[in-house]
Length: 213
Image (tube, rainbow, N blue to C red; front, side, top):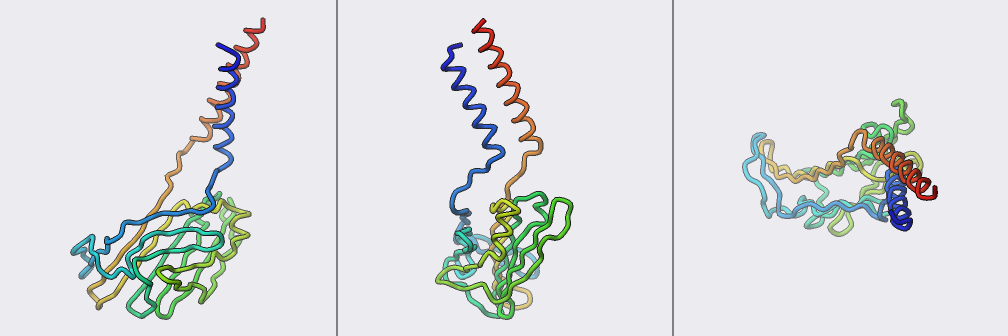
């Protein structure tokens, strides 16, 4: 095997090993949702789906833009007793189930709660901020509270997202939309990448040594 080819393969293996321990993220996180997909529930039963009605609850996308979460809808969200907007983001960390930011916007609810745990489940932070979710055009702009602590302790990437909207017509009938996003972990992936990488580097080293001899 030519020396140039060996060096190229060695460089590729090292890059793959670096990637697994150094997540590469863009400036923003964006997840889109299908439009005209509102569904109608009556007496706890889904009656119809993919409705092009009530765009003010029709989720278009969620974006983490700097220090804000921005959720976009088909029309401006409505703050009223019959409308509910809820979201929850689980962050990537030692204990992703215990690391989350969630919130609700309703006629008399407007809050964002952030909870962070350490690797043993101990609570580092559990705080709620009220009246900080704003309607800006077709979006809800939600400040990421305690973002400095999140970025210091965790990766500012969501492992799991749920967004749920509801327009209540009466006690038995509602129109709804939701967005669900999940990153599926691959148990043991990093371990096997490391083992294969070390083995490959060792073999290439032996080949280089043998060639010199």
